[in-house]
Amino acid sequence: MSEAVVASHLRENPYELAKSQLRKVGDVFSIDANLIRVLSQCKKAVEVSIPVAMDDGSVEVFAGYRVTHNIARGPSKGGIRYHPDVTLDEVKSLSMWMTWKCALMALPFGGAKGGVVCDPKSLSASELERMTRRYTSEIINDIGPERDIPAPDVGTDGRVMAWIFDTYSMNKGHSVLGVVTGKPLSIGGSLGREEATARGSLYCIQALSVKEGKRVSDYTVSIQGFGNVGAHLARLLHGEGATVVAVSDSRGGVYNPMGIDIPAALAHKQEAGTLTGLANADPVTNEELVELECDIFAPCALEQVVTEENADRVKATIVCEGANGPVTPAADAILEDRGVLVLPDVLANAGGVIVSYFEWVQGLQEYFWREDEVNAKLHDIVGRAFEETWQTRASRDTTMRMAAYGIAVQRVAEATTTRGLYP
Ligand code: GLU
View 1: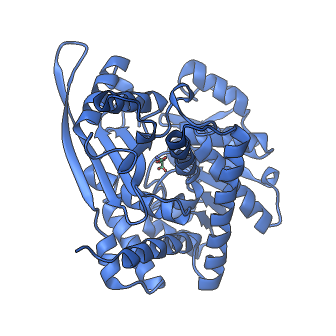
View 2 (view 1 turned 120 degrees about the vertical axis):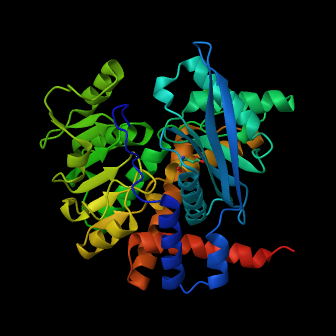
């Protein structure tokens, strides 16, 4: 989000939306109402205050959260978000979606998420480091390789993960590789992790193209968001011969119906820090980008970009959710009526947490894999989940979202029932 934007991107309470999705899954898949009640709530939510000495000598106090939604299938897993609009309910919704994502991918993890209310772009590197280290210290008893394993999300990256890893390890007295994923390669990260979320989206689009009797190179695509997910997805799709007609970052985007030169866009972003001003492309706003003429619209930034207000103007026939929660339930219903196929977040952006799982396993074993092994295993898992979702969609005559969430919630419900309610 640019500094100029004052209104939050969250028009509706995301936790209420996530709970309403869960209730619908409960109805469609006839899941015990007692279990739905249990799964509607987060197991644990920690709220901390993070005092930070700023470079100018003042002290700023940031609010931080770490929420575990569920651990029935394993330790909780999920990213940490640094963004000015972070709220506790947003973190709760994101943690619930992590539970479903890990279950759909059959990973031995539950769901969690963390967040700090801040604008990371306005902090210096040393302020960011002090904030991250203090936040880590405040949640140090809540995280750990067998307990809860953070990772990057919006506004955080490998550098932030390195500080979390170091702070945790310094407190334990030895390096604990499994405490966090998305680490730089030099300190136990996994090959392929950085581009994994986008690669998982690409594999979903490839699988769908086979179902449609097409090739990836037949599609025109517009991509919102040019961070870790959007930029890599643009690069990968361009590499597969798709025509990427529009890309954007938080300040706005660029459009060319004949196709954007993606290597040039990546270089321009690197140099200028923005996509604005890219040659051979017209400016486009983030709002306009949602409604552009194309086959695939891939929202890869924040939640609630397709709402009941604009869903009927989406021209794409496929929406690929690189972000978490970019389509609201009301918009989902409109897109379904209009025959737009939505590849839901828990399927389309699961590549990140899948390779996070690989990184965690490699760290625990202190044995590291080749990049082609990582990508092949990622392909297996995404391909299997896509096929299961596709089959369930057909057999239940429902949407890809309901099918994906249904498979996931049933798995978590089964684990909960099998374990039994304690005490
Ligand atoms: N933040 C990413 C997500 O929403 C990755 C989470 C992880 O790797 O644990 O899926």
